[in-house]
Length: 216
Image (cartoon, rainbow, N blue to C red):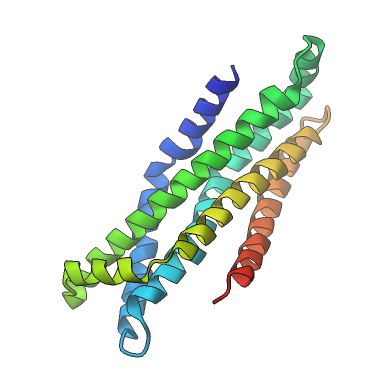
């Protein structure tokens, strides 16, 4: 059952969200690379693109999509389970709700967010290049060589740390708000709103903190 719930959470959060994350990544990457290409004489074009996409915007935009699409759904689901007494029923059957409800969603949502982060980065860079190439005619081999040379292990580590941290804090916040609903069904919308706002705020704080720790 735990494996099934984890799989379903990954499918709902990652696979079904591709229709959202891919267009967002294309638009974001195009916007960034087009703007950066204008100042490529004064600044390192590829390095600036790497920092903006992989280190900063990639994790936070992916987290925002997950919050709006999946995290709110998780809060609503747990809230209704709380209102309808399903969590108490699980306990009465001798099953720990933390193992069946909390653990699988924590693992599934965090794994899905990391996967979406990787997809976002690849699509943003590739799609951004297409937009830049159409307007500036930068050769593909030259562009890719610059990206590869500019990409460092630290860039990947920073992005992955943010993605994993975002997944953990988003899931924890949404589940906590869902558990706090109690027996009042009208408390579910309020809990969902609080979970979304708090998750995004915590992600922003983590984003700034990690960027400062790995500041170069």
